[in-house]
Each structure stands twice: as C-alpha cells, then as structure tokens.
Image (tube, rainbow over all chains, first blue to last red; front, side):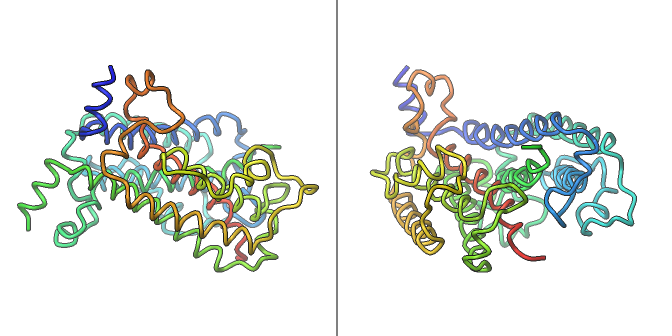
Length: 171
Length: 171
C-alpha cells in the first residue's frame, strides 16, 4: 500500500539496497549468458574489432575477475586462479594456449553459481565491511569503499566488456 | 577509528548508499571525459568498429540518456530533448545531420554540470522514491526500482558504451 511506499522511501532498508546492487549484477550476468547463447565457438574466438581482444579472451577475463570476487568479498578460495596469467595479468597472446570456448563457458557458469550461492548466504552487514584489498585506515576515512561497492564496480566493468562482446554478433 | 568502522558496517547510512552509487556514476563520467580528451574530432567521427556506431553517435546517445535522467529523477525539464530523434529513437544514419563533435561535447558537459548540481541538492530519501517511469502499484511490489536504481542502471549503460568508444583510441 502507499504507506508502505512512503515507509520505504523515507527509510530504505539495508536489504533493499543490497537487492538493488545484486539485481543489477545479475542483470549483467543474464545479458552475457544470452549473448554467449547467440555465438558459435568460432564466432566467440574472433576479434571483437580489428586488432582488439577476442571474445574468448574477454570471456576468460570476465571469468577471472568474477572468480577474484570470492577473495574481495571474503567468500573463500578462488575456483580458477590459473586464469589470471592468461586473462588478467597479460594481454592476449596468440602464442599462449587458452582453454577452449566450451571450457571457459563452463568456468564462467560455475563461478557465477558459486558466487550467487555465497552472496545469498552473506549477512546484510557483511556487505558494508571493507573488501580484502583496502587498508583499514583508508576504509575508516572512505567507508563507501566496501564489499557492495566492489560489486557495483565489477557490474560496470562487466557492462564495459559486454559492449565489446556484442560486436561479435552479426548485424 | 575501528569502532567507527564497526558502526558503519553494522548500520550503513542512507547517505553512504547514495555516495556509493553517485561516486561510481562520477567515475564513469570522468573516464568518458578522459577518453574524449584523447580523441580528435575526426577520430570521434569514426566508426567504433567496422559497420558499428560512430563515436559521435555514441556521445550523442549518452548525452541524450543522461539528459533524460533529469526526467526520471524528477529534477525538472530536460536540456536537449531534440537529441532523442537522432541518438535515442533511431539508429545512426549518414543522411541525418548531426550536431558537430564540438557541440555534442558542450552538451555532454552541460548535462553533467546540471545533473551533478541537482543530484547534490536532492534529499537522501528522494533517491528511494519511484522514478518517473514506474507505476506506483508495481513500485509497491518492487521498491528496489527506485531513482537510485536508475542511476546504477545508467552507470552500467555508460560503461557499456565506453567499452566501445575506447576502440577509437589508436593502439
């Protein structure tokens, strides 16, 4: 009822704010999944634009970044740390053997399953604690740099690369 | 001090939520501004990839979308509604005359000046009210679809197109 609306708008709950951020994260995941469903493995292996990263590299990159969220959010060990050298620490190289598109799609799906399960199990106040890469003395001065903020940042990062991956879809 | 950190993480304030979202929005604006500073007008007029939107079209598109935030957030009249036909409602056309890169950069800067000023003047609880395009009966069931949520969504949208605009920068 409208009193309900007024209550919410006057005093938003912590749960509401978490839902706002997590639902935007899930929206990007579902957009990437729809995009992957439209592309053959050969199409995914192509450059997103002339001389730019391939779809395979960007999928590996996004998988590694999402996998690293397990560490940033204090949710336990990473699943695929071996992806960092190929897709995070180094630019794309034709000389390094990458996992196959099928393997990368499997890793991507698994990372999101585990992340979703562990994020859903977090207590609301856990989201507002410092992430693993910020010093406590800095966090005390900049408390907005918390775990939920990292998820907002990674959601935008995913959107950035989805904007490039969409160029693999034939017009 | 650390008690301060604990207080914040246990009971984050509405102001903290808003700062998290607005700071991510401002980060995307500053990234686009840095990118524009690297590009000549001729470079901005080029296609971001073969057969894809030009930088000029994407800058006009992002300017129109940000201008429309004035309406979504209930912050008053839009500055450049005339951009919608060219950059929002229709795909890019070689046959329609667009504003010059210099004009579009001016519009982009002005929209962000006005948006920033008006967003900073909003009362915290205003952000958690329904945006202009959602029906009240739906908002009562989905209160996370508020004005702040629209800003998260538009921040990701901007990241999506920045990922394409960055292809205009020579490697």
